[in-house]
Length: 279
Image 1 (cartoon, one colour):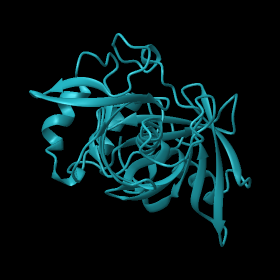
Image 2: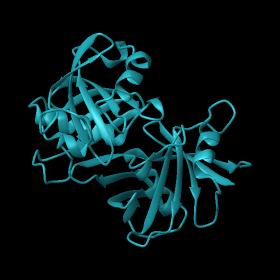
Image 3: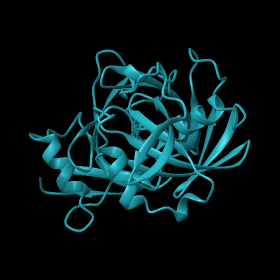
Image 4: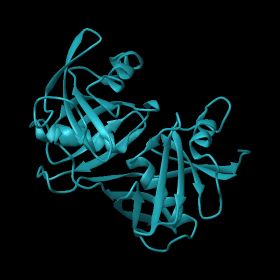
């Protein structure tokens, strides 16, 4: 199988041209290629396929083989892949993922995509739709005890569920490996959850570390950065345009604060290498 390794802010995936390659068991392939010791090494597998409702379809799998609904960093790299490889000559493309369409504007230099701006759609804030089990209509600063310590979480879906936790120290100081799994598998999250730990540097800058369901800690999460920005704006902690600083790089996020309006994310997309692997 031919593949291309790509990354956005260090959130790395193995990309496969589904127009040319057929994978019999996509979930098993995701587990194999994602292994950083015995495979290629990645946060997951993304297969680019034809779509009946958009320009392309993104089929995303996490490192454990579970299907992912959306990846903000991944979809920017899909846009770069199709543009750089001549599958489209458009600088604005529509990409489907699990029936939902995102629109990506490509920033190209010398015929190659270097960054992209994604219309991530409006955030989902109703608890039942995220989903998170609680008595309130919205899970905003909801108390949750994890590992004997109480946290206040603000839950947002950007096509996948997120629990945003604001902390009073650098996220680099927390024991993420320990508490990330506890958040992910807490019973109030029926579909598991991605968790973002956020330190508000000032009203225009957030420092973030993320634990992604199915993958563990990653260097970046685009939907997580969007969820963190939404949560910060909802709670009056940040302005409507801000930068989220992740371990793998920075993402620019903007949101008006109105629930029915889209969140926009801008960030880099890079090709690492290409090759072939036996599946």
